[in-house]
Length: 376
Image (tube, rainbow, N blue to C red; front, side):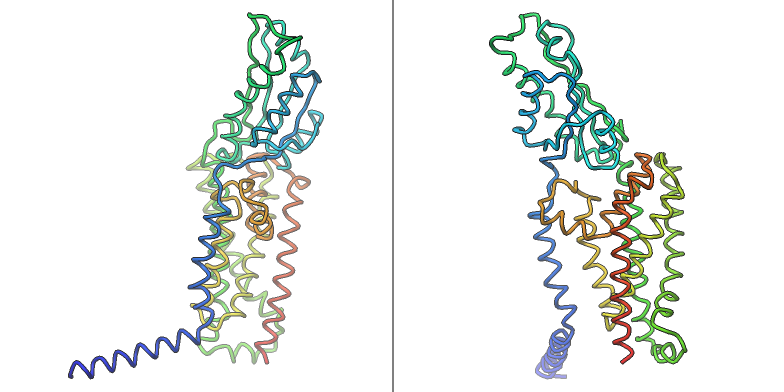
């Protein structure tokens, strides 16, 4: 074989592959789209130092010092004051995730400060994600010191024996700031998102590639029957994975279980059903198993980055948070962490359960519509 002949054969194979790539538009879109998504998300959406975190204030001493502290918190940028609350209201909102911090100014705070007695101001932080609250908590003593110095200058100036206010920090739900308490419950959602979606995405395309789709269509079953029959086994496999993860969480990492295991499993069932239905929808869109896998990873990447699993959710810009709110993983992470670490009940987790249910219904309807088209 001459070198010229070899070059011609290589050129023929090369042209064949180029033509195949042009025909496989989905793969080409993935090749171009995934780098763009990574650049945008890592460049704009990811922020390990979140600012403007929702904060509630409980004020029992409405003096100028307390007002100066609240103003200083707003100026610092870490805190977004969402209003004044009673102690009961503030703790309820801290438990359901509406607030990230609660700052309490006790009675006689200014009097104790001016007279040189020991004065304390308390900040309660939702420490389920230690990295999200660490910088804000660390900045609080300096904010209080500057506010006290400014407010006590002049007519109410404290004597030379006066002490600065002490900031007492209460890290709730994860007092020691153990990273595994945040990561391991989140792994339930991330692992289920990848595995259940991917396994189900291959379900219908496997039938097409093996040539058994005709036998399936010849059966006296409706599209709904096929969809349910396809996804049910993978729901069982998902629960098997959950059992393994929870067993490791309790035995290896000593993750607490403050809430109801039954409620947690209910949330898991809803989440797995949403993922396997999405995977089934991918299988109706893809022509090959490779395309189904590509679509799964194209979906998994934003879910991983925008859900709050790897980076603080509140640290992302508004448009990224809006995208994250549309993802089931975002809501499931709040459910599983709320039940396991906070002891949340149905009232607290319901605002994050119904979006998963709505996603399930919408994507299930789309899957049925797409499957009817394949019947044509």
